[in-house]
Length: 243
Ligand code: HEC
Image (tube, rainbow, N blue to C red; front, side, top):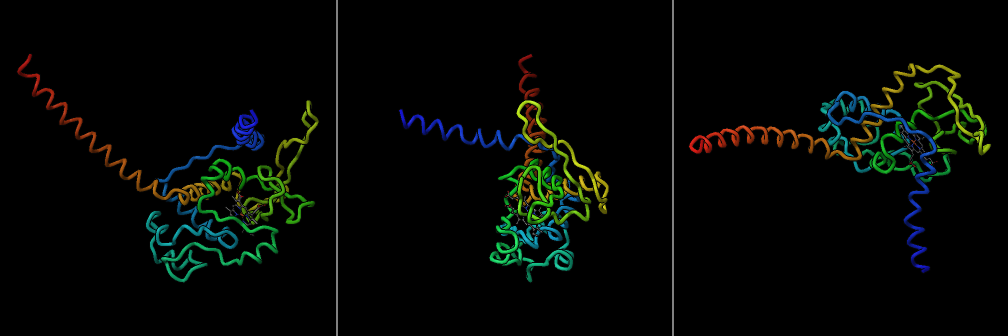
């Protein structure tokens, strides 16, 4: 009996934690591995704004250049801030001890983050930072409360504050809406597109083989199409004598 209770507990646990996470509505985002311009813009944002703290230590610069059709020369000139060789891994230069001292925790590797968190979560997270004077970094996040990451994109998005109200039945504090208190370099629409590009890039990085699979898939469809024509012709040939 006790064993059964333990098993039941473990089965329900993921459900419970998901229920908690789902309390914030996540925005949907279009992920498209064939949209090369979007992936290129996302890669540019990633190396400029994220790589200073986070690594993507399972990704190499030359793989990215090949998959996203970025000329190697451009990658070497404008994107390789943390490696000397184009075959190098996308590692951050920040020593973990220093990060721990500055943020209280080491920024996690982002290569597979789109798989562990889902693209919808990341897209919402990157647009959910708000000013919070009580937090050590001065920032907080609606989908990741008490997050230790400072909001480094505020120059692009602008500074927003969050307005909360009370849930009528439970009396709990509930997020209502954002208010833009300081304009950024981008309009809200431009910022949303930029974060879609960045999320698209993170989703690509979590599964680069998807691009190869799409190519193979296209060839397979063409092959099946040709086969269909041949088979139909063959059928006519066989039935000609029977009719
Ligand atoms: C100044 C350092 C810094 C920069 C720059 C930075 N981050 Fe972070 N990030 C952090 C830290 C520290 C955490 C850990 C937060 C925590 O656990 O409370 C974090 C957490 C995250 C998480 C959540 C990971 C999880 O635990 O699931 C994501 C996603 C993320 N960062 C994405 C980004 C992206 C995308 C960029 C570039 C636009 C970026 N970060 C730039 C410091 C940084």
